[in-house]
Length: 230
Ligand SMILES: [Zn+2]
Image (cartoon, rainbow, N blue to C red):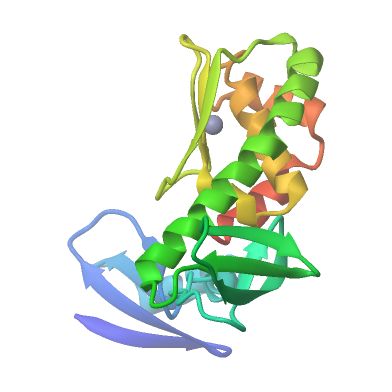
């Protein structure tokens, strides 16, 4: 059975079930709140529990609200596209020569065939992002190879759906998400350092975070910034 509990401006759906413990959850996309409670638990106890968790609930709701869903880009003139953490207006130009994109006069100029489709334009933009990342990443790797004292054998850039980077410590191979081209320079550097620290410690354990803390004391802010997008 379900009932509603209202605390301040927050509405909580309470479901009593044959369970042993209380469960509290905040659900996307609207941040609705649900509590599953044991059948025998009193409404007062549930209310006390929710009250104690109010700050946490608000935090979760704020997080969901902030979450930016990448809108579908159409690659038409006037659209905003991000590069290195900044928005640029897209200017679309037609060319019979090589299709390309470049940063010019504070805009991203996209040179494509007349009548090109959204997918074709997207592909040209992605190639540009890829080539920019391939210029931005090597100096970062060189800098951190020295500081961390590790060697990267191979690295590449590819589109990833769920993570910003991945590292195979045994092969010393690192992949970076193409979407990093849109993020700020310090977020890009954070991912470079994060993946390279995996060459010292494979797992996300205490030792790993101690290294991160040592090399990049503001890594948590970068992680939060990136969490908004992935
Ligand atoms: Zn990691």
